[in-house]
Image (cartoon, rainbow over all chains, first blue to last red; front, top):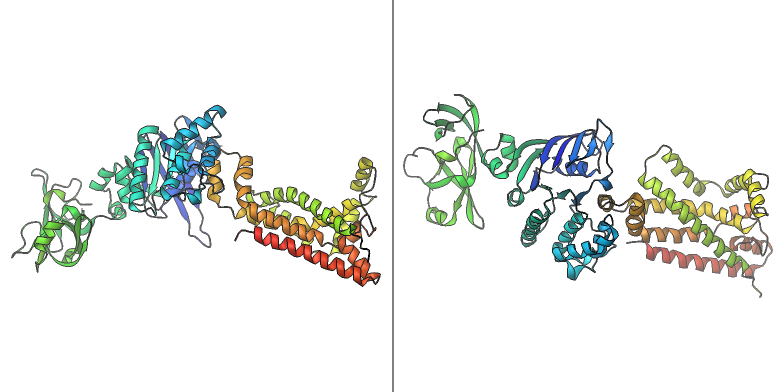
Length: 360
Length: 218
């Protein structure tokens, strides 16, 4: 288990503006994803935990060891922290073979155990045929597995991964996810994974911290965050929502209903606790929760007439972009056959299923 | 014409010794300048560079004052080794060192600083001490640039004239280096000897600089 409370401020310089990081979180076994746009402080958080950068304030507790405590003046050197770190560029030593890279990392283990441990990792991460090669002779997948093996060989209490799948093509990415699942199952080491890829959060994350400008803006299970972002800000960061301005027109807790005015139309939804009549809200729905249909006379309940502006082909569905008049732009993901059936429609409506209505 | 090759051997020996000393001391200073923050860092950097800009007479004067037979260091040397330091080939090594050390420190610092920081972070993260990090990661990664710097320092050591003349003198067969021998030959009107030695020193220097260029990473 790791518990961290961190504060670090960088004053403005000629080549960069001021930045301040202030985060507090706990992570237990499993993968905790640090998600956010670049410049949100994700990598800095890892560097503070690994000890490469000293926090101004705060405390880091890893299992029962205090790694940093500003008040007590404790700052354990990076080499004594026992946190495996997989760097963005892997940072495999270019002048050593793959095996030597692992041996270098194994040197803090008892002498007799080293050799066995290195062989064990080489086998476990399928690196046998590449063991004698230098990093520049390795394939992308081998480099990646080697860097994870190297980080794990000293039996760290925590594994830190800095965008390890960035820039990899789809098959390598899938392979990496597989390796990481294996690591999670076998090594029982808590993992902090930095990414700005939402798919990665869902593929790997047990838990997720959404970061922005040096702050954690929401945390929880990825599925939960996607179902109920805590703010418009979080919804924007996740980048997969339709965010439409609206006004609460009716609320009925007894019948569990509500009505929100979006543009010139009323949309019905479940009762929204905590909202008042007349509140300005943002309707937040994902494109795949919406459907589109051919317009047939007057739009019925929960429909907004819209003009199809663009249809983008995706591997498994069609991504349709509509202009919804006063409601703004609306994106809808439609299954392919559905789209084929409707594609010649002149006029469209976008339908908001009652149960998928969320407001922020 | 009978040519006395002693000055060439002496010069090579002096250059070799001064490069070895410069490498040992210079690497350490370069490491401090590249990786540590301490008070007086700028001053140390400037002091190390100073010999590159001061006139040889000034440097020679300093060395005579510092190492001469009347100075504490000179007296101590004489106590321990039984003979004075100045006007021996060892003084020529020190004279050469004044030129090889700044070159070496400058280039070695740049070489150490050019090593990607993520390798050093990785090594620390994997539990390496600063000592092991330096010898097993930073130095091997900067190896080629440092060897190139050493070759350059060697070539520069070969060519010192002024300081050597002041502190080691011009004793044929004992302290007369190549550069001094050429001056001697020209003064004595021995054009043939001067020409030969000039060609030799040029060829050796050219060879070493070519080697340095080949070593330097592209």
